[in-house]
Image (cartoon, rainbow, N blue to C red; front, side, top):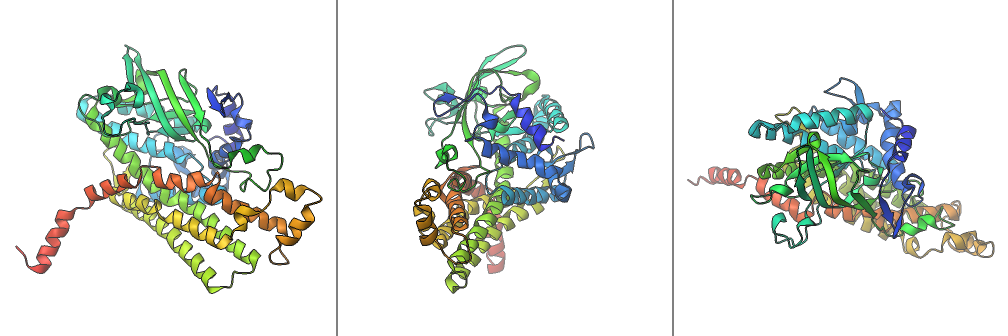
Amino acid sequence: MMTKDQYIESLRKLNLNLYMFGKKVENPVDDPVIRPSLNSFAATYELAEDPQYQDLMTATSHISGKKINRFTHMHQSTDDLIKKVKMQRLLGQKTAACFQRCVGMDAMNAVFSSTYEIDEACGTKYHENFLKFLTRVQDEDLAVDGAMTDVKGDRSLAPSKQADPDLFLHVVERTADGVYVTGAKAHQTGFVNSHEVLVMPTISMREGDEDYAISFAVPTDSKGITLIYGRQSCDTRKIEEYNDIDVGNKVYGGHEVLVIFDRVFVPNDRIFLNGEVKFAGMIVERFAGYHRQSYGGCKVGVGDVLIGATALAGDMAGSSKASHVKDKLIEMTHLNETLYCCGIACSSQGTKTKAGNYLIDLLLANVCKQNVTRFPYEIARLAQDLAGGLMVTQPSEADYRNPELKPYIEKYLKGVASVPTEDRMRLLRLIENMTMGTAAVGYLPESMHGAGSPQAQRIMIARQSNLEMKKELAKKIARIK
């Protein structure tokens, strides 16, 4: 396995074609806007080195029998699925941000089982291709970005019916050695910090969409890939002269990019689906299920930090003993632990696939994600309620460092006399960061739209709810024939 330092150095070898704020980024590793997201990603390597976290952060490869990072592991039991959720909660607690590596893990597990069943039905060799890719990922401890979301264009039209054919990623040329693909993947979490990208279809497909039913893996710096870094609320605070307090979370963060594929070549042995339209939906459904399970871990860990920060804000203001403060903290904890219960439940009810890895209970995973589209927003609302208006109105750090102004700020922003004013300012900026700043991207809108927006889960819940069986239960009790 790679160490944290080895991982960071490995990124320096990439030649990413990355743009941010209209300019080419020559050194993403040390860029002050990007570096916090790299630090979060690097935590997945750092904690795997720590003996106290070995059980959660590492696993035994079913291919080589060697110890590997759990983020490259194919789940071999329900215990593995449960440990995945516990690992994600731990990392959320350590970073208070999106640590970005979950998407690749979920994509690999989905493609692993799907390729096995595609080969079984079609006589293809996609699973063999994927095993070759997976073996390298595990042996070299590579970071893999999972890419599913196309820009979609006109949502009422199928991929092949769009006015612009590139609005869904698709094959534009086929050769004896492989294919060339063009299109884009949006909202790509952690792409800049990854070595490889695993591309999947974004929706179920039908006859006529064969060129769009494509799954493959290529290096993130492949010729023809261009990255455009996404804006985040308050992101330029990271490059201000005085930013130790105002950024809220100085060390950790997340990122998303728009990824453009312009005639990117994919060798045949890197292709995992190529025109078999009826299996596109299988990959989508399984990836979505795994990723909806993930949110029952990572968002809970971030929620732990936010609840702790909110409780500290009460201590610093002298309001922690008030009954309404206690009750709101109880409600925040109740909501957070409910999300965790869902993540653990869908894991414990997982089943073995034909390929040998374990798939979560899809109904419960969708229930988990449906709750994630709501509960973090309520937790954030209660955090803002208890933090108070000073969270968003306190002076800047530049003002605080001004010798003429600092005495006033020290005096008038004081809460409990024993608590340094600067500590209170730091804590309030952390809550701001998590509920409306850069970290809010991963905690709130990502909770809403990541792994599919709310309606996507409701469709799956309806599909898997087995209403006919429940009707029969009611008929039997009511003695209706």
